[in-house]
Length: 557
Image (cartoon, rainbow, N blue to C red; front, side):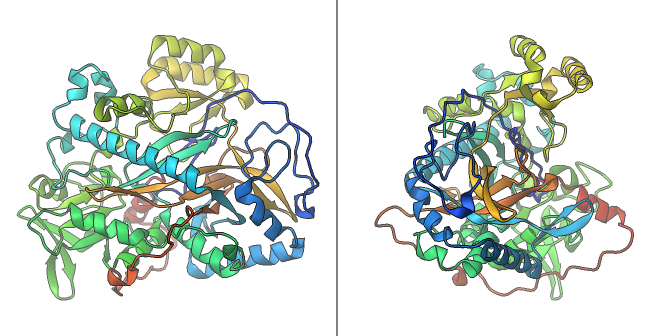
């Protein structure tokens, strides 16, 4: 969701989806006058009357301790220096093929040169809250596709689950060997006007964007090596190691050396770069549906040396395209019979089929209740205040105050279909009210949240721009690893709360500072990464085929 911050595009690659709009609203405090002059680069950086929480400067205009060294490091730079560095960042991304599609054209993903800094104490709290949330959602998915005890106990209504478009009865009764359904999660966070981190939405299907996290760091280290001498920043380069461990652990217990593959929709998918990067770093094969077959409830991969058994599939394809036997019969992206093989326990699909029942935007409002029910704990990370339009009292409030709220479709993604009440026309508001009355289950509403801001290069100066954060969690069945940092998305147009790349958003490198005395070192990626051939990207033909269109249809999330 996002904001009114809307979230993501970059983020998915699954065929997964996701959107984002934020909400939350709070009272703006009167700002104090700046206590000191800011460096020339920050000339024009507003110090008074800012409704949003600025992560570099407090309301008195003083740099926060975590950003102080960064501000001093940037202060001597001239506009020409910054532009030269920004151009170097752009060239590096183009050279590496790190792009996204906008209006049918491939463009380099905008990386801002000012990193976002998160202190060790702040991250420790976020990490605990993300782990707690992932564990509770694991329990929920196992429950709703099993005994449905949470429904029997009256904690959540049955129709919450059964009316969810992504609750798939075909997945009922499928039990993963190690019990993990959420192998990878992306939890979208925003920071409200008071500086409190809140969960905006959960992404449990095919969360995307981690490739930008790793490549942002690598590119920043090349272009700004001097900045890294100022901070002890926790590394992000070991993500593939943790992901491979989780995927191998997911295989049946009698498989000592399971074969893992990454299943991609193909080169025409906007997240293909991420699919190929992860396969390469894990040292596993990158495959398309046509490269595999099912026989006798076993999955095989076609190779130049004959058929090879596959035990774990890290899929980046939406459920509906995954198996034409059970879902879309016209799909050319999946593998016929795959779900039957999973039910027989002969292959593991990561993330599990049907996980969308856990990241539905209405289900999101019940996650704090799930945490208390399954874990017996209080939520460590609060949700954004959300109105459930299917409940009479909330619906009445939303219809009366729609001009003050953000209205989101429960099944929407990529920021599309969202109505921002404060800027909507009378005609748009009237149409939205009719839609809510017609399908109350299909909508939620949230107060507008002024997302926190971070200095961002705009022209020849640094100016505040709104950001969100998507940390990535990997569950290997024994513990949940949260990659220190995550994808910070930034809304580049002035005043915009929309962080989607498709709507003018960019990204920032996210620096999580190491705690005092911590030892920073990358894990031994070389031990698990070996050079395997990766399918070369074919030339795009003048007209997309049906298969190419399905690749592009995979939602971003």
